[in-house]
Length: 95
Image 1 (cartoon, helix red, strand yellow):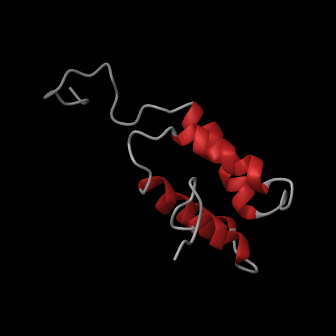
Image 2: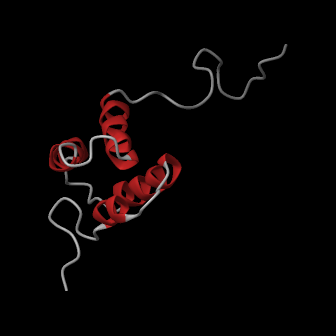
């Protein structure tokens, strides 16, 4: 039984498009599940772009299309997370 395709083997994104009244928050959650299931050797950007191309014509205003587009932007410009860089490790910020 085959559920999705080469970009979405589990059919998570496909199923999101079938849910009537799905919200952006729900789409983000589904998108995160999908991203976590991508093998490390796969190009995530390429997979997302493929799905945007696949779905944007038939569902341009769908929350999942919006989520996929934002995924492209977010993954293209990762931001550093963590503490302040200038502070030496092991020392308090407050003197």
